[in-house]
Amino acid sequence: MQRTSLLLCLLLSCNFVQASTGNLEDNIANAASWLILLVLPLAGIYLFWKVHIYPEKVAEKKKHPQLNAIKSMCLLSLVFGGLLWPVALIWANYDYGSQNTPEKDIEITEEEFKTLEN
Image (cartoon, rainbow, N blue to C red):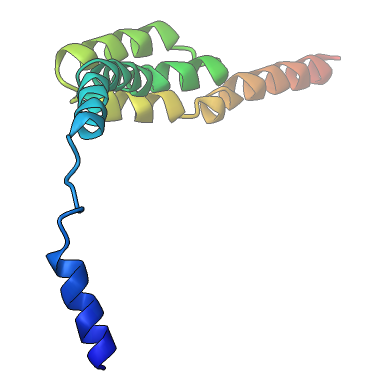
């Protein structure tokens, strides 16, 4: 116990302990500030753009019949701060497949009509 307290007193009374000059910390802070000021805003703008054209990409993938209108709504959403973006996304994901079936029914009835005439 005495040795430990004596060693602790000697270590605390030594003058060889120095503080850092701060060059390393200044360099790290300088690099971090440039990263924050230049890279992150550009990455944010890129991410904002990619999110806002996502409904357009979905509509292109699904071969949506109203693709040009969805593209226009995506651009308008950029102007209005993203308020129209959910509407464009819902519109792009809307399935028009169920509305094409009446045309098939008409074709079937025409074929049946031809067979009835013969």
